Length: 366
Image 1 (cartoon, rainbow, N blue to C red):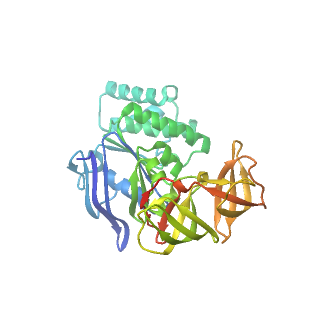
Image 2: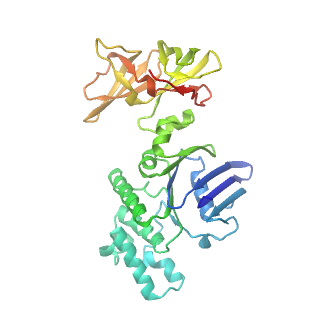
Image 3: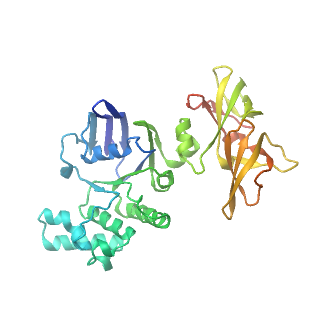
């Protein structure tokens, strides 16, 4: 049995359905990240685990115990909020120790717990400061420290880095990863930022429309998405999607026409049934190359913008049918306004039905 088990969980506010029949298993010690667009239900699911939202249907269990009717304080979960939620008139020591003091723990016990958390989070020199004297990253560490001293079974993070600037977010991501390694406690983290999800998660849970679209290791979702939503959501820059027609399929390959408006290409995907039909081809920016003058190129594109990033460039193009594309290329690979031919790493291309479902077939050797 999984350490934390979410079974057929649904949530509605009146006639509005937020989550529908969510099933998810989380093992003890995993770092799990819920990711998805605003309104997909990820924060609601986190709050249901914590007990701050009631469950409309289904069950949530921790260590084999059903939590549906258990009070938030008795679930062994500690929540870290986006807004820090620190008391401005209290010092760092007082904020971190607040829960323990409310539980009437012994003074020496409190001091030991707070000092241990302060050491882990590098807050030793800040214990006598009040929130107004702290930076955003320091405030977030204080909020995490308040959770650590409770020694919870599960840490719950609700978009804790969204108020920080870009450089500090990168630093805090590294600190959270190190914290997880040191504590080994189950952590569940909510974010709308898929880069945060990719860099932090052992297991990444992509949500949309109140449903789990796919769950698994981040690189599995990147390389092997179940549907077009996951393929497009995971990865930056996002995957390119080109309309085309599946003309024929045999045991070794599928042949497509009109890809991007004009191209005819073959993909080494066997075992695809269903006959001729409209499909969508998915190509990540790094799986397209700008072909040289004497090199073969399956697609045509006109360059609209080149983002020079130093070591590499993001080349924005439009295909023959006007579909926008992005190619990850070497610096100075193309000029805005020029027409280029694009080579395809056919073995890495993905195929989707027009309703967004993945056409898997079987990958064959080229």
